[in-house]
Image (cartoon, rainbow over all chains, first blue to last red):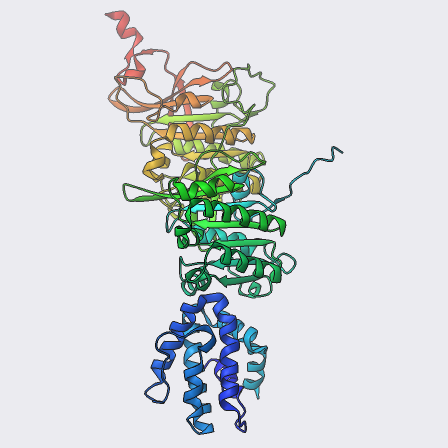
Amino acid sequence: MTPPRHQIIKNLISPLSKRVADEAIESWERLADKLIFLIGEDGFDSVYARSIYLNQAAFPGLVANTPPPQADSRFAELRRNLDGQTLPKASEANCLLLITFTDTLAALIGEKLTNRILQMAWSMDISNSTTKENQE
Amino acid sequence: MTGKLSIRRLSTGVPGLDNLLGGGLPEFSFNLIAGAPGSGKTTLAHQIMFSLANSGNRALFFTVLGEPPLKMLRYQQQFSFFDIDKLDECIRFVNLSANLLNGNFERVLSRIEEEVKVCQPRFVFVDSFRSLARSAKGEGEFALQRFIQQLGTQMTSWEATTFLIGEYVRPDSESSAIFTIADGILSLTQNLQRNSMVRKMQAVKMRGQAQATGFHTFRINEDGVQVYPRAIIQVGTATESEVKVSLEEKRASMGTPGLDEMLGGGLPVGYSLLVVGPSGSGKTILATEFLSEGIRRGEPGVIAAFEKSPSQLLSTKLSALVKTGKVGVIDTRTLDLSIDQVLHDMMKMIKRMQAKRVVIDSLSGFALALAPEFSEDFRGSLYRMIAELTDLGVTVIMTSELEDRYTDLRFSPFGSAFLADAIIVQRYIEIESQFKRVLSVVKVRGSDHSKNIRQFDITGEGIVLGEILSEYNGIMSGHPTAVFEQNDQ
């Protein structure tokens, strides 16, 4: 069964948005801001690097930062990658990356805690909104 | 009113720990949880934090280089106390690794202060403090001591109760700085002896209050840490009472016709009776009758049955008693037990059931169920245990298996006979080419009792006392001779 979180991620960026890269980076920064408090920079960077690696086959443009990123330029490479693609492709790539990232996180620290972190990061009630969407 | 400060003590939420600390955790204290890796430090810290933190009393948990936070969150969630709903609102985790990699004590201190100002926590945890201390080793011992002192003062000023968690096993220059400044020190150890692992906790120091001294066993299960404070004999707890027990004193009826008379009117309430005899001599039956009589008189009982698992419970009669709900059974299936753990479970059940009668069947099985480390001090622990139980006012029967040798008269393989207030000995003897059972009351402290040796049979009704073997001599040798035969010679 697909976790409800996936639907939230798919709806995170509007299909009509002209600022896909900006919105994507903003989502990532807010997530990193909350998550690094909990699992540290090393924890975040390793899950992020793996997510990039797992999606490289589908989106060869996605490249991990090398060497490991500095806090202020953590998503610089991602921005460059997204900027170099069409809006729908960039949105799809970001969506897949977020899904992979949160799936890995959920496998490690559980679905409930992952949702809780996303809720704090994106200021939305993951479980409630998801339920509504599922019902719809 | 004296106007003197009275320090509030917080309940840690860890079963048994408040007793060990001497009544709880002093508010705003600066504490160290020390122990080897794997000894349960982080689990203990988390359990305390999740128990104490709420929306009005937030907690900050600083993670440093030690266990990766990702793994810590993964594993700590396995415990029932880990409440995800408390995260963020009541509990915040802050990772300090980045500050340490390119910083010094001052930078770490200001980062901690920064977070404390924002969160205004009542509880602060730093795990692992040793990683933090070592990261700035180049700064020297004085800098470390200064840092710890500043941290302690700062946290107390912010009215936060603080816990440093560190892999300190033995005193060294680094730990001695913390040991000096800390208000409280909890040391966790795990000892392996003959394939049996025993966890122990010691409240090394607890400023301003009298902690329970010595080592205390604890276990970690799915609910977290459970401490079993070592039974310590309280002043006035009498196991050595030589006060003459009068017949007017309350006595517990044994449920075996004729046995009360042999004991001088029943077993004095609050006494411990040791029933000793070889295998199959009827010790458990005598104890079962004691529990059964208790039910008849409205006195619930508790049995710790070490001889068999509860599912095979001893006899049909005992099973029936347990089914009535008036007799509680202590789970003794776990091996590597400590006496304190059994005592803890027993006390809990005694209080819950308001039990008046307790049976330990048998000391031999009990000794086998204990971890080797505890077997070595079985007698000492048993002494404390009996004192605790009898202090509750319950009447205790302990059975003990003793091989008949017929060459000497012994009452217990553990040298525990002197611990008991009363002793009944059962033996096999040979009369007219038949094995017969006999029993005798050897001792009832402070009370008159029968000196007779009486034959008895085990029937469907329990123990049936028979004649006094006054016509025989040398009964305890196992080969009695009739008095008239001797006279003939």
